[in-house]
Image (tube, rainbow, N blue to C red; front, side, top):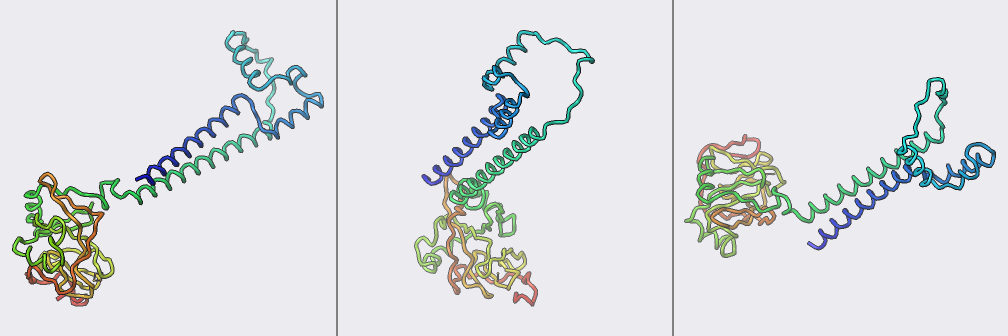
Length: 289
Ligand code: FES
């Protein structure tokens, strides 16, 4: 938490510094504080007798600006006739150079600021996965009876894309067996609620494992591993059953902690005794039978 706050502080500080630097450039430009290079050129012109008098040369940029503002306020501005209009003179290449430099400076500052902000946000997201509502955070799946109804309406497999998970029912009659087979008691946090929240990623090589409505198994299309409805491996090259998430019941609702992934059960664990209930969804080439 302290690291995150420190990073937020650094990003804000960098933003303030960039903003202040940008304002200072604007202000310098408004009060005619030009670059050293331009001032040197002006001094050379004065020495050569071109431009302002010696008295004018003593004025600072701010004083010149104030005098111009006062002149405008006192309303002494007289319209000029067409005859007094000066002929068009090509712009000073030096001024154009200054404008180009200003543009480049601002572009560099903006780019720098954008990069710092993006980096800061990426670091915060990495260190603080629970900051978002999606994968990595605790997800409220819903009130227990409602979740059960949704699973049944979805033919036994409720998919939650925001948590990259499948939620299935865990039979109450298999709880005791699970406590022994999984090596802990309870077998995993929240099991007494009668659910299992399975990570969709295949423990073999990481493909997304879909459900198969006809067999009532999970069947991986990549290399043919298949798992029963609670994610226990029943065949194929996977090294274990499907990984799953910690759960808890909070205020009558099922909450799945997608930031806590528990390794799937060892090969051979079959707490529910479920067999295929119909044909496989996989072709013969992938090993699904
Ligand atoms: S990735 Fe699923 S069986 Fe290979």
